Amino acid sequence: MSVTTVRLQTEVEEQLEAIAGRLHRSKGWVINQALSEYFVKQNLEQERWQQTLDAMESAAQGQVVDASEVHDWLGSWGTDQELDAPGPKSGYQK
Image (cartoon, rainbow, N blue to C red):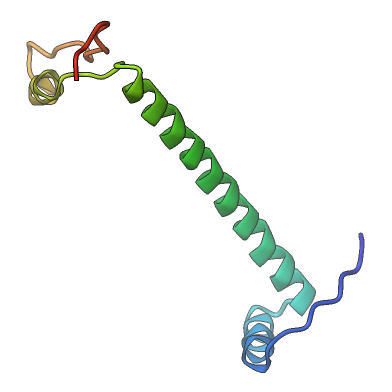
């Protein structure tokens, strides 16, 4: 395990000490937990951003699904005539 020095604002240090005391854990443990959760969140945000870029590229190439088909599909959920999910149409004109 490595050691990293961080300068904390007074308010942050006070909150860190309070949380560590309340949890009966060390400040290092709380910091490690917080950073681990932050990394997970950042990775999810990066993944979502990449999905957004991919979707924008697909739309720019005309790979889109007609909104009325999506509404019909959603409206069929839970019925005896549930429809298959609509897919993009090739050659869709903007």
